[in-house]
Length: 122
Image 1 (cartoon, helix red, strand yellow):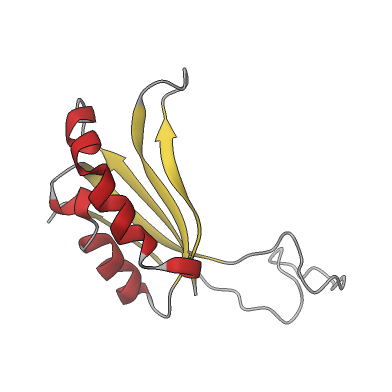
Image 2 (cartoon, one colour):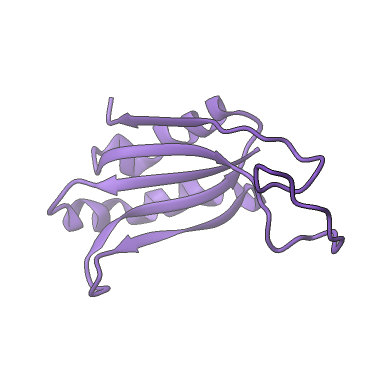
């Protein structure tokens, strides 16, 4: 399953983020190819980090929750909120076949479903 994880930092926590960054990156690297995309988010001017975002492939939403709970940033109390949503990749279409789109806006024969979980630092 693919998950979108959005972690929003507490305000004025750049020192905490900087001091924990190496440990966070080491932790994230242990997930290897499961992480399809990861990086920080910024304010509109692009100078202040506001959080982190991940696109990750894990078997269950419980595994995604565990990934988040064990992130050193979260353990240090950096995040104000963490949101996890199950997502489905539509583009690019890796099998290069054009399938009809159904009334739900999905390719015919694909699952229609949504899983979402939002929780704060607990």
